[in-house]
Every structure is written in C-alpha cells, then in structure tokens.
Amino acid sequence: MLDIVLLTEKKYINTNKTDWYTQQVLLEDNLVKTALENLGYTVEIVNWDHTDFDWKEPKLCVFRTIWDYFHRYEEFSNWLNSASQSTKFLNPQKTIEWNIDKHYLADLESKGIPIVPSHFIEKGTQVSLAELANKLQWDKFILKPCISGAARHTYAIEASECKEYEQIFQELISNESMMLQPFMKQIETKGEVSHIVFGGKYSHSVLKIAKEGDFRVQDDFGGSVHDYKASIQEIEFAEKAVSACDPMPAYARVDVVWDNNDHLAIGELELIEPELWFRKCDTAADQFAAVIDSHFKAL
Image (cartoon, rainbow, N blue to C red; front, side, top):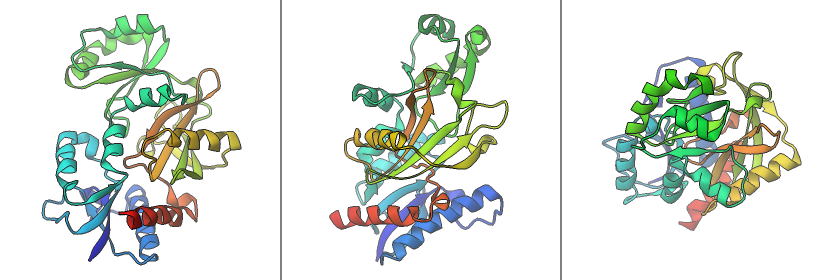
C-alpha cells in the first residue's frame, strides 16, 4: 500500500548531481518524507511525468518540486486532468488551476488584498508596448507571462526602452497572455519576503535578496536567502491573503514586497509547487506533515 506521493520532476529522481542546489532540493523533499513516515505513512517521491506509474496507487499526491511544469504546461495540464481521475491532489486541482494563471491576483485584489498593481494583456491583443507604457504612466515596469515560474520571459523595462523590446513583446503576446507591473523600487534595497503558511497558520519567513545589479531574487539568478523575523503586521497580512482563497490551501508561500508607497503588497501567492525552506525552520516539516495528515484523514 502506498499512502502519499510527493511530486517532483524527473531530474531529481536517482540523481548523482552533487551541486548545492540539487542537494537542497533533495534535502527539502526528504525532510517532508521523513516527517510523514514518522506519522506512519508510506511515502514515495515520484516525478509527475512518470509514464509507467499507476496513479491509482497513492491515495494522495502532494505537489512539491515540479519545477518544469511551466515549460511543459500543455503536457502538465493533460496529466493533471488524467491523474485526477485516479488520485487526490494537495493542494487540490481547483486551487492548482486557479493559481497557475496570475490572473488570480485580480481575484485577490477584488477581495481587498493589496497586490502589486497588475495590468493583463490577453493573448492576441493588438497593442504596442509603447501604447501600454503611455497609458499606464509607469517609468519602469516588469513584463512577464501570466503562466510562468523561475523568471521565465521576465523583463525589467524602462518606459524609454519600449522600442527595444517591441519585437519580443509582440512574439510573446501572440503566443500567451502577458502582464505588466510597475517596478517595485524597494525590491533592490529591501528585497522580497516569503511567508510560509500551513493550514492557514503562519510558520516562518525568509528574506530574498537579488544579487547586485539584478532585480530577480531567485537563487537561480544569484539571489540569496536569509533568515527573517516577521512582524505581527506581516504575519496577519500573510494569513489574511491565504484566508481569501477558496478553498483554504493546505500550504502557501506568500511573497510580499514593499510597494512604491512603502506599503505591503502581494507579489505572488504560490500554491502549486513553492519552495518552502523547511531547512530554515526546525518545526516546518512536521507542521506540514500534520496538515497533510489532517487532509489525508478527511479523504
């Protein structure tokens, strides 16, 4: 009998890589696996695109390090629909499908959750980047896809540079929906804080700092991760953002920045496969396992 599968991508299965990034991924997944096994569950780590795996076998599949899905979105979507006929997902399929597309930010805003201002451009829209810059009146802005991760096709653009990016913008918008956000200046000075929430309750936080001369805080691009003590205001802000979701997600990473008016704002609400930095908090893996346990027992 197999109770729970932790979903990953193929390159993290039976790997001989010893680089620090791979090792931390393996460490994180194994911390969760061990915490669940300590509760008496049988657990395996399986890549989501494993063609020979029987998805009827596990009772519950938990999304973890599936960091290739946004490069293979159509294939992933087909698998998600197929496997959902055989097993249950955590977070659930409804939540995954909602959170995949960054239009969810507009839903949060409609519920009173402060977000980084976001302007969405639907696939096939006939508009130039210069026209949008003129309409929005942002001196500098971020262009990125509505479905993406790891800073895929993400560009920081000065309003005066629109002509230089026009061709790539037109290529992108002909293939997928895109979005513009004003550049949050304090991300270069204060960074971005990720708050981890399990079952609606705050667990821990980390501060992400971009390398000098860059705006991308991901460690893929040289960003660094630091311990961070969140204030009561920040904790309440993160929990409120998660409570605005329907249904309440079992786990969430709330990425928060200080906007250009020095107010807290949601940059991303990650509910699919967020890095959760279990290694930064001794109790986090057990907290996560306890939430998974309660969902498993409710199946």
